[in-house]
Image 1 (tube, rainbow, N blue to C red):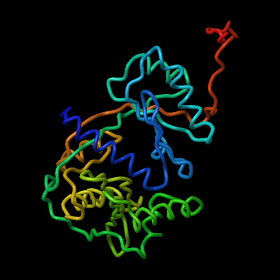
Image 2 (image 1 turned 180 degrees about the vertical axis):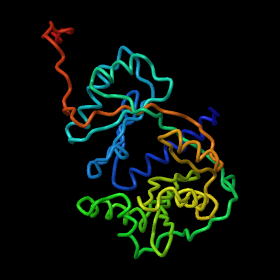
Image 3 (image 1 turned 90 degrees about the vertical axis):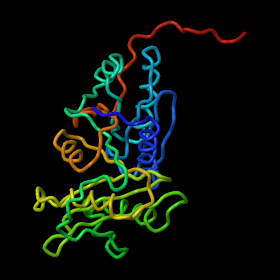
Image 4 (image 1 turned 180 degrees about the horizontal axis):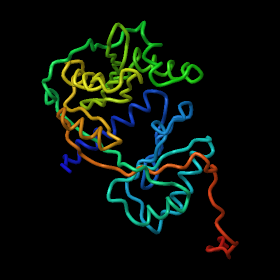
Length: 276
């Protein structure tokens, strides 16, 4: 796998965290990891632990602290660990009921203008303000839509300094068939949530949308990033001009797992003495 300078990778990961924050989430830094959280958007995409380095002798306290943070909020986080995964973290996560997803999560990077010059065969453009409900419909059902729509509206129309959010739409046969959120923080932009209507999948709409996002001159960004969660998607993005930069193993709880930390075992004598 090709490598990318560490600073570019960290800038891309920071942009992803800022994307969650601008939609109303928050990030809590603890020793060894960052806990990215969005209480009103419970999807794993907005609730994950970015592992930064946890030692074997400190992992028990780390897991208790991290899981307590999410379980108190009835959230099911994923743990994102850079590959190769240390053996003690893999064993610890499995002991807590987490299981690795079949395919790694791969972060890919590209510079502006480096994507395929293949012409776009359909209309792709930034969404209009009046199309916010249409944009939100690509990722939410009616029940969850008001919360996401409100967060999207704030980030889109009232950005903080150093950031910009541009929803994109690809059209076919007179209707919107694919959408994505292009978000820039400082000099790095990320392409998030690329989604295509089921009836339009396999026709290249998502690929054309990604090409437009980086080659359309929409943002002043030094680099662009996107994630792939399957080998097929990674190969497609590589063919478009992206380069794999870092891969992660994602661990998740099965749907039937209870949100509880296992009992510590039988009571033991105190390991400290109170001050006299």
